[in-house]
Length: 598
Image (cartoon, rainbow, N blue to C red; front, side, top):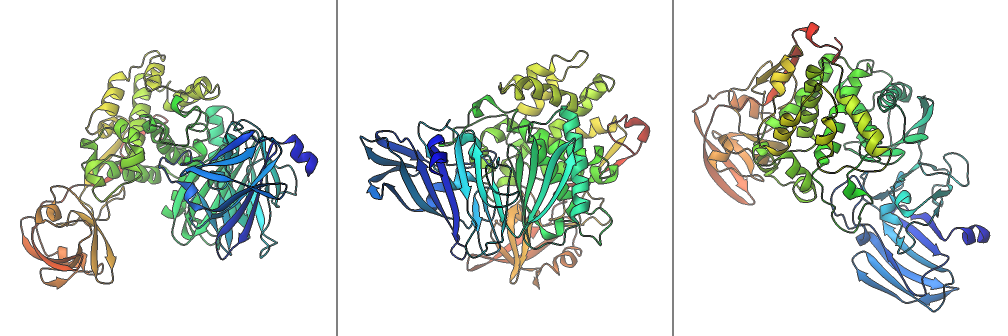
């Protein structure tokens, strides 16, 4: 070990020391620290998740020593420390604990069932040596010696899926390899000649063979699209919980969080919405291997992890990815056109339900991701537009327009492939106008006006008109209730709605958000109010549909609700509900022209 540490200047040791207390212990050995003092720092955010999360707040008891003697450590800021090294450049060791109880894909988690961490949460960077190669040794917990370990980080020692030592060429690489440990289910498969792994932690009943078969189709399709993969292996690290959803892309893996019901079981033969959502999530994060991990904005080259890095391009990096995630499920033969169009209808409904798209452009949404999008409040439907959802619709409009103008010779997939080869594979990065200028290279097409309007205007996109050219009809309908705006066909539209999203509680309906200029808004009802009665009858999740079915637009009712601990009375006049569910169907299959199979 001594010889190993002499050749590697930075070595981390990570141990899950307290499963009940959710504590990792980290020891950082710096073989050649700076004489006088050595600065250390921890990222304030993790690439792919645009919110300052202050991971350093979870560090406990940091100290430094050399040859058994303690060194003075001063904390300079929330995420920076200075170790007094004197005149010597001899090795020092910095030790600390990290509290890990965030069950998400963004930070770190540890309990008696499983452990997960991103190195942005655990590993301090050594100032001045960020470009040096590093090693990371992960040790099994004493209370669970039989746990397995999975990661995409290159292995130096230990058998496959065992604890051991791993290496990375730099700190930037180190923080791009998440780790998952526990009683893991591991299913390997080959896609395009490349080894892939599906890793599941947590109690589940998944038909892993069926899932990996579908994942292989997704991976094959995407690698074929870009003509090559920017990795030599890939791992889907999946934490299975009762209720949860999320994903975060990495250079040769993704960290996923999904609900147990999202993993199809052996006794389920038909595709269902939950499983489709899981496959879409996997498709989304896998597509990011090209579109944000290698092709990325110039401002992210390199990432500045101490503070926000602003870009107006997230509409492209998340929006394009959000279009292709569902589209590839269909193109790869996993879901039929009806299921794909339902997912597309969901996306249209997400954009059209509120008035946010008329208050904010998609480039503004991208630029303000750090504050408005990642810190959404109850007024979000009225004030912001999602660069994911509207970005996906922009991608749809671009794809359909390119196909129409080029007689189906140029598609958005061709553009993505060409962009990646020129700006991603070469690590050039993109400027705000790169996509604009790049699209001008394709003869016979001109999407400048469409793109200008889509990115910088606060208005709806020409989705319906473009889809009609491909034989797809878009039918906006009033949903069955306030919480059901989606892409499913509506058989029984509500006669009236509250114009507010709500959730059921034991004591009434808690209002989550209120849509501007609809019934609840005009009555003065606010987010956080708890509606207990409508027309002097108890309001609950079980009774709300029956209650509202008695009324028509123009009718006035009394609504009782608690705001904090005060009982308030509102006079609510029902207005005509908004058509916020969008049902799509193929009416003229002969016009699909290869965009969809039918």
